[in-house]
Length: 162
Length: 222
Image (cartoon, rainbow over all chains, first blue to last red; front, side):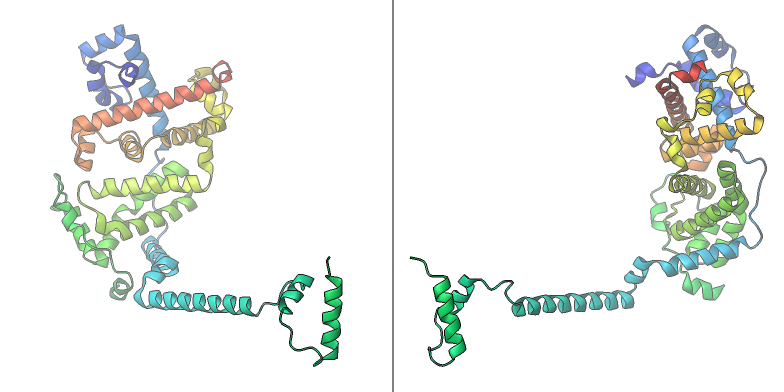
């Protein structure tokens, strides 16, 4: 597939860069020129390359340019700023690295402690009759607290099923 | 300067890597300068910056045509040079190495600025299409400044489709005007390989241009 698409013949291809060097003004050797004259594929591709060269030369700066004075100092400032602001480079520093890892570990421990404590102390979301019964499976002895006795009787009546 | 070298230690030297290479640029004046810079000599780094700043600035300006952008990217280039100097392996000339960094930085910049979105076929303007159809008549109708701008844009868009190495080689050949022999000397690659690489790059560019002009059938006729 790739070879089939390579139209230009070896004879022209070998002298191609020399020819293109001068924007196509440098004459091709006689035998190459004869081949080009008779080979439409080579001619077409060569013309394409010449045009391509002209296009690429549009990227040439109009003249040699120079940055404003003090460029080296600005480069150094940039290097310093770049090295100073990098979070990763700071983290990689031995002292900062240990400090950061220590702080992170402390934070994780604190967070785990808080989560566990909260979970243990969390009140039940909703006191259902069943949950009250479950709690009151083994109620403390009746007659000790009249209010509690009344609640127990009411709950028993309300949840009574035949 | 000495205090600065303490703050900004240069990365490790690339001497060990250089031992593997077939073409060794260490014994040139430029190579010795690089070795000094690799060893942490800030004056050597300064010489490199001051020796190449105009070249780098011109390359960037040629591509972007904006002084402020050129200054910003040139600083970025030399920062990269500074940080990567330790990995410079003397397989190519320093200029070639800096040139590659410069062109890559320009393309990074274009990508970040989303200028490069124009590279994709669907974003090609009708003006680009006219130019790509190589219609002399269409080109003559546009004012010269507009044509120059459109051509630069098109060149950048097409080059964006090439691998970095081929892009740099083609630019060194066409924009910087180096011969195959010079390129071989600069890159440490033999002349025949350079020719093959350039030929492939040129063919890819032609194919991309042709494919793009085909995707917009109306281009050629307008």
